[in-house]
Length: 422
Image: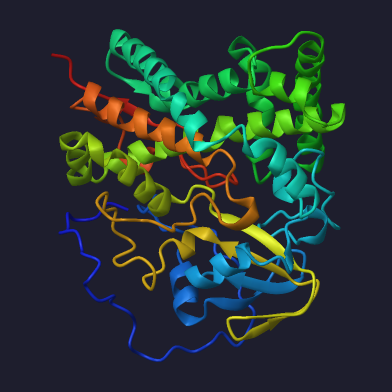
């Protein structure tokens, strides 16, 4: 949603919180999923009201399960770090319409998002050293080169393009392919599978097919890297880790799919948000050193990875309520990141805000493994794009930009843009 320019609020100003008493919902709520027309950057309508009424409320799931919905920042953050709550897919209830019948299957081998300790701990320990802050910063110069190459191509092609296809998708795809040691020329073989895995409305058969297709592709790469050492992440894991063949293939597919989609949507949706808030765009153009802080605020404001689910392994008292063993809790990260008790004026995009502690990268043991890589990519790509094209603007009315309301990672399917030629 486009907002009027505002004066940045300092940390010493008091929060503006509701003063009227709130009434807890008397009946279980359902998860709001419809976004208000003309507000492509705001969470679904109704989440704020539910958060203001009760940061943890009873919720009815599409399969009839009665669990919980967490919307308040402190409640969501606490649940994400609580070992009494499981991330295992086979234990959770799916919160979105079109839920499959019966329990979900366990996470595919290597998919760390669906694991608990100690399995998750083992995988995380093996991979953590590959995604250090220092190693990701070493990739900054390569990110600048890739970004410049694609901006050059945009400039040569002339005004009028889909920024998703021409810039937002290929730039992080090249980065993750180079990091993992995946030939970028093969992207047609795996991007379709990755897109299917991020869709909320595909059939179980389509999802299993995408997993199988991605694993088949990675298996061929792993076999080659077992035979001949290569200087990349998959090559290192193939030669130096105690991962089985199945685990290595699974982790490779998981990292590839995750690295292709999330940052691409942040680049595209972040650009969309900046173009709809021109005062913030000019602030970033005027002060390139603002970029790291701007990235954190965009992660908070947009929260493209918007929802996750956990299930109680035992009875647990949270936010004054008792969650029983076996009950699922849907965590609305987008509602939490707009909680006025944590972020003053949360519905305003303010690149000078210190958005420390946002949940855009998650929290706890499942906090995004590739967050430092994403920070490098976003910190380089967004300012470079705005600097190269000072007159960059939407090529269609904002209401005609197709939104990814059907995906587990929110954003835009396409972002038509144009600019003036000198």
